[in-house]
Length: 336
Image 1 (tube, rainbow, N blue to C red):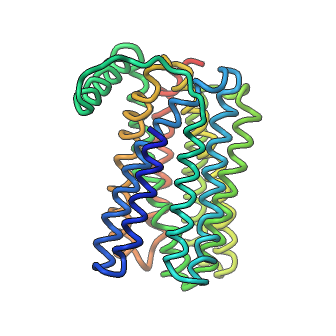
Image 2 (image 1 turned 120 degrees about the vertical axis):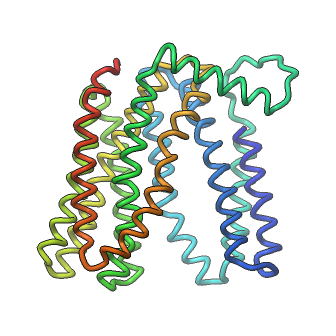
């Protein structure tokens, strides 16, 4: 799956190379980004399903932490390298380097030996996908219904808090406070470093992690956004605001990453190996389904509350803390 998806991505970018100068750029890029997000949505469950097959249970958290750190590092360095390439020769060098990277990635993946038992199945791909989805849903429904509750808690958090941060930080820094794109980039880079640090903490402290306390990590993320709202309400100087939002972005990413790694590891460890990919795909779909709605919602609300953005942030923090308190009951039902 990973090899096919990487080669498919390379082919898609090759098509983009030959078309972006010939067709309207906005609909083309919307279409390409939708396909790329679709590929990513398929790719991640495949990766998550592979990790328990490649590392033993004692190193599962460390394995997930490494995967998360590599992804975070890519998100940190990608915009920097992309910006340099764009400055040198525009979009074309970025696309060429991307093609080379995805082809090399696919070739390397060919040589990864992931143990599995091949199932003899003469059904079509859509029929197999339908049966896989049904099998995964039945397992969760009968054996681990608590997984659904966890996924819906994360979806609610993505709707209220994650979307507020994703939309709010660029709006606050660039549009409301009229700061430079460079300062936005610095804040986003510091936030990515928070993800790296959170991965390290998750790997080091996983033995002390108790599922019943996972709601505390969510609650801290909610409080972080509330602090940004309070700083806005106090009408501090631009410098104080910028330092505050940068430091708090780092902190919230630390705790969010710790929560993600620990929760994913918990699901992996409690799911039969042949079902991990199916279960992760279902749970990711539920958890992420609310985020586009939240981003569209906050995009409109930041226009309405342009002069009082603190209202949105404090409100989202308050609701998020209520969700975290509610989730305490959900996470207390999880077992290590």
